[in-house]
Image (tube, rainbow, N blue to C red; front, side, top):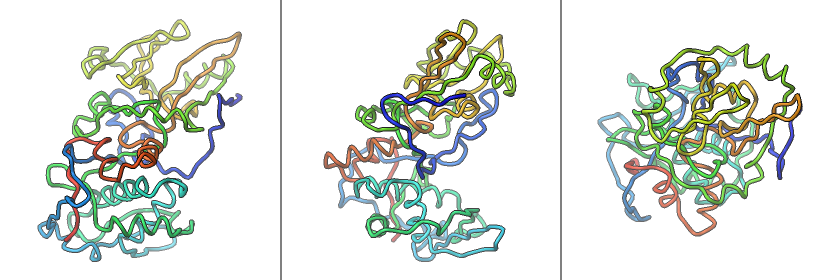
Length: 333
């Protein structure tokens, strides 16, 4: 199996997916991407309009009173929330990115953590993070965290999970089309400048035998086509004569079907080591070429797109408002 590149090289980055699609197994039992999601207010908030809301009813009266308990095989470490946010930010976004993009990312990390808090102990958030503390925290990262200290996003009064990823294929994805009906704030928006990223294009090449062996090893399921098509602007495409690709409105593959057996696009992506589920299948001779656009699951905020917006003068509020619908910016008192 050979891995080829188109236009630019796809680097292996420190990007930590903000919403890990992982093993979206079969059928749309893949509540797909069960780890990170995200949101933001639909209105026109300005820098001075960040809503100050008391979360005393949730036991989070002050940002300094919330800690992250990192449980690893080496023991447990209690870390102040903002220190942990800075460490995660350093690992999941390029330090060279604009400050406003880094601020937006810091808010999403903080929101994810708060949404995962223990109902029995709202001031302590448990994680298992063996990579904590391994990367130096730069002044730029610290500044982004400090200037957004305590700021997070809510949906219907509760901390919202913040989905983010590296580079889109030109659009972000709709949560509804991915069967994520409980996250209506995940909508599809255009990211017209993401094609400038060196991680926008890539290609994987397999021999027919390699491709078939991998496909046969996958855990496919039966499902009803109507269940897929009713979820939005879903289109179908024939590939390699025997496959059908079901695409969402952002041109990502939701499902791959062959002979009545289905797997999710994310499962296919993981099995074939693709950068994203926005792919096309082509065949030349005895080789199968999988041409891919974008890097990551495509839900929520495109980090590259956010950085391009920041370059054009948008602040973190404008950035988040662009990528997420009906979410409110909130801050600890």
